[in-house]
Length: 188
Length: 188
Image (cartoon, rainbow over all chains, first blue to last red; front, side, top):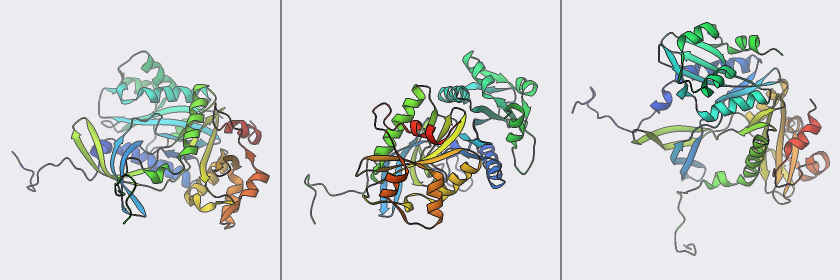
């Protein structure tokens, strides 16, 4: 058995949850963007907490609870929603390492149904999809993704994004200025 | 030491989190109400998951993660939001066992700030407050709560709710028909 350079064996207990960390970069960028929107009084948009099923809780002290057994649950909605100029907006953010296409299996069926419902109730629904390899982030109407999902398409070619979607402008403040693109699609 | 009738000692490990279960009744009623609104195509309103800080994760099998150490975090927003007739709505739900007043310490400062922000961005913000003793559930404008919170009032007398707020109609389908009252306050 080959040990790691520091002589330690690989352990299954992680200080950080790596499976969650995969794809954290876009999430970080969006968190900072939403913070920017909040601080500059542009919009109130928050990421929903990850749904977790708590099974066991300990009380090391009376005053606080420590969860000792819990599981990640499948989200029933998208991750982000909020209010912008009085309107309800709702979106999901995904990134892929693929150079050629975005796999639709990245999106849960529940999330597709939720986006459909949002559209039906006159909310504004979209997706933010990043191709890590090209470091390109696209603004995609939920309407388009739903149609492709329903036609049982397995993935969306990278070329489709290039030809049909707006690439998000790069900036530091905020990192992903998606409301700039949003305004183009969703008129008041 | 007095043992419990079944001879077992009290344990700090709980299968269900009792501190979370306190006040679950209103939450259950609202979940069923929101499900009713969803199924009857009236509105899309969801409770946000409880924010949890995950510290340690195990992988008993490669395919799934078990959280073995985590803590409850203070929420930075209210618990409920969604879309109704294209409009963004946002509310917090609280219950109290007091017969005489609702303690404002039940509401986090972050939530007050969030409700203020929602109002500023033309969303509709309110609270649903239940007095368990009377089994009465009131619809309260966030505007009123914010004003009292800011004047450093410690609690709101029960009488104030009786005199100034709409009591939610009781029904089984849905259990708390808050959108019926909502329509009265927030015209399109």
